[in-house]
Image 1 (tube, rainbow, N blue to C red):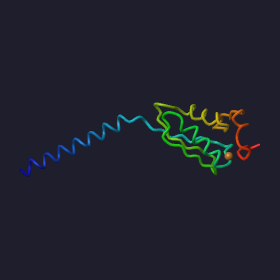
Image 2 (spheres, rainbow, N blue to C red):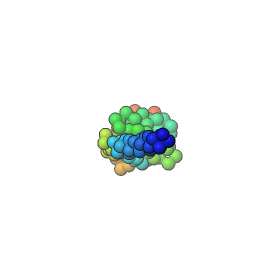
Image 3 (cartoon, protein in one colour):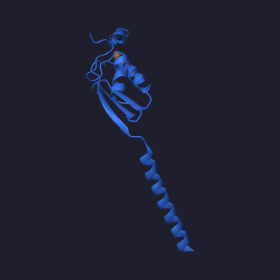
Image 4 (cartoon, protein in one colour):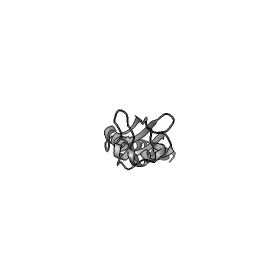
Length: 116
Ligand SMILES: [Cu+2]
């Protein structure tokens, strides 16, 4: 009786382990990108970029560091890519890596967010 109980436990452990492995394999790959956002000056800039990037399908998280001027973004590589992330940022009026900001969007930013 005790042996039967032990073998049931063993089967249970083995089954739950293999299920966990399967889940890991099925999950799409999460990538992290650090994008230089050199024209960011304040929290409003940070919020504008965060809101814009979050709208992209496949983006898990966005964190803009105003002091270091870096946007750290976690995304699913199966759904989006670095170019799309950069474009979302330039479209709201900020430089992203070597991509220049959209000037019309930049003109519409609050005065405190303009760098010139
Ligand atoms: Cu700002």
